[in-house]
Image (cartoon, rainbow, N blue to C red):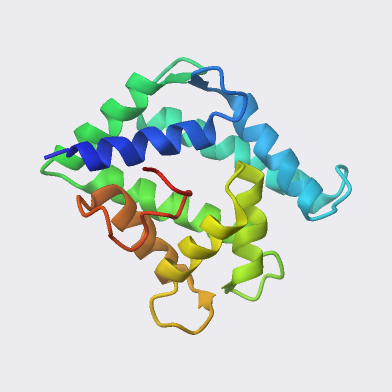
Length: 183
């Protein structure tokens, strides 16, 4: 069952991703995040790395449209919530699990600025500021995701956190702050 807690978290994530705050997720939202990441990393916009970040950001949106079977170039809040409700309530977890894996990989690749296959507290907090999430809340989210307490987030910890974010009804579940304070 898709709980009210899950609905609130999914709604919050929509708001985080809706960079221009127009009530729709569109390619420009994802491209703008890519541009902010490029700026955060102090990359030349013409560099191969910058182009890859922008391409990955755009691909994430295109894949989202594909997963939602949406032929339009925008997603409404209703489309977004309905997708997650349907996936969480489904007897076949495949699409949501695939989304979680792919999104975790994408987030991990973007946040791992030094490419050491681990995300430090600073890398995590710096990237969340791109989404207008405060440093304090970002650090709190980092602490939740760092399950083994080694001061780094591994790829497996990222997947576990994102899975908890979408699947858990528990308001205190680890991973709930992965995208900032949803309450």
